[in-house]
Amino acid sequence: AQKVTQAQTEISVVEKEDVTLDCVYETRDTTYYLFWYKQPPSGELVFLIRRNSFDEQNEISGRYSWNFQKSTSSFNFTITASQVVDSAVYFCALSEPGPWGAQKLVFGQGTRLTINP
Amino acid sequence: EADIYQTPRYLVIGTGKKITLECSQTMGHDKMYWYQQDPGMELHLIHYSYGVNSTEKGDLSSESTVSRIRTEHFPLTLESARPSHTSQYLCASSDLLGQHEQYFGPGTRLTVT
Image 1 (cartoon, each protein chain N blue to C red):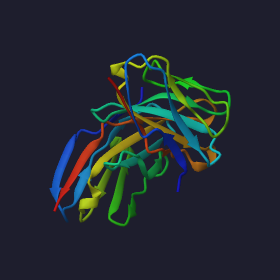
Image 2: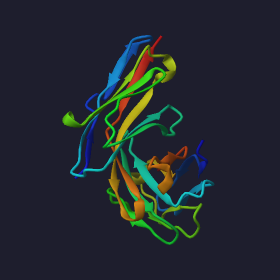
Image 3: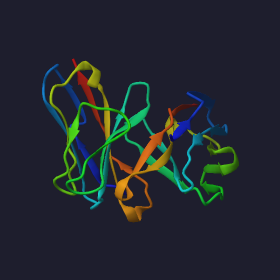
């Protein structure tokens, strides 16, 4: 069965610090997708990144970067020079194939990130 | 930018009432999903649809039901609400060409008293 583990329930740092959110996954599928979503206090889930299992290149988008390592089944997310606006709950998710192209998402428990001024 | 809408945003209702949570998307996506998020933050898939007239149960058992009569509309119904149904309900959609990312609505926060 698919499983995603985000071991850090809560992280609190001071603004401008770098912070890494850990994500470890389990799957028997050879083709799968990994995602990170952000959930601000308003409640909606905002898509941040998708990674497929064949692409292990790390990705950087502004202050955000992602490190995908198949050998350790990890997909970690780093925020550089954190800002107060980064405060949110962050979810890592793994896709589970369903019928007719549906992709069911299995979410981790979420990490609540608080950036203090 | 995704266009997916949920109404109501907040609902407080008494035990035993029938409720329908609305979800609509204007992107023509064929796949739609309902997730339940408990107060401890975890999200679980409760229903999904891969097209009109298809509905499937997700990984978390739910007493709710769904229907998919039109591509853009995927309502969720609780015939008799109970306090255990208190949760946030998030609707999402995706298409095959969108490489599987799901776009989420703003959610409905349901409280059953």
